[in-house]
Length: 353
Image 1: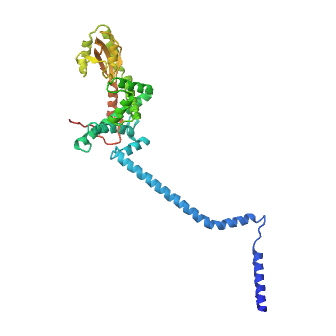
Image 2: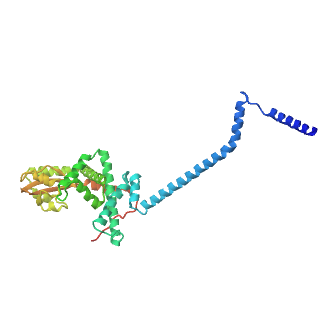
Image 3: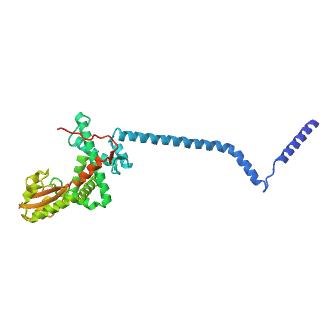
């Protein structure tokens, strides 16, 4: 019993001694105690932070690898395989990828594909060409060159337009489309026109608007840069007003134009015929033997003389002065190495029927 009491007493003394060794928390020791508790907690916190940090690093590496892989795949498909599928066309619409450069003016891949895809769509849906056949493959290569030439020239048009502040308004585009619709009896409305464009070329209404805008801008730029053609037309008009024979003057300025070579007489033309250059309307507004002012067409300047008029047709002669300056300037760019193409497209290819 005495031994048991001694053990109990000894244990109590030991506990009292340990309790006396526990530091008391006071205002002076509060900060020190807090740091000690935090230090103990860091043993559990840091391993978790390191794990999260490692996950972020690995995820970032995987994401970068995927982006690099996708970029390389896209580059190969567009610049080597020259894919034309909807998927890669959408990519070019999102990303401003270049396909060429003209005198430091970038040519976008999407513009090239818009032209090419519409031509291929027409061949498949309207001409029923099998693009996988030998003849079909040749036609694809031919259309690639046509599409490339078209966007290269349009890029040069855009460059000149910016330099000269030449623009085309939406009103001009809409007016052009309305004129095309009204000039064709088979098309009842603009909706029908856009439907036909969609069926033949696969263009949306937005595509049609942009392409017409490019076309009209080209007409304006080509006319603006050809000062020589304008001066020549003014000189010819002055001679005609002085009494020089229209047919003789047309033959003297025939160049490669067969109508000029025949004296300019185009014969009777229906008033409902398509009139892209406005010659029929101009001639119909005149009386027989009257001369028009200089008319600016898509590819040159015209002077019209009305010969005979009927209720539904008109006969007139026209003198044509082609635009040549833009073509010469563009050819000089080609010869001087200022045109770069980033995909391999045949320089020229002939399609035999």
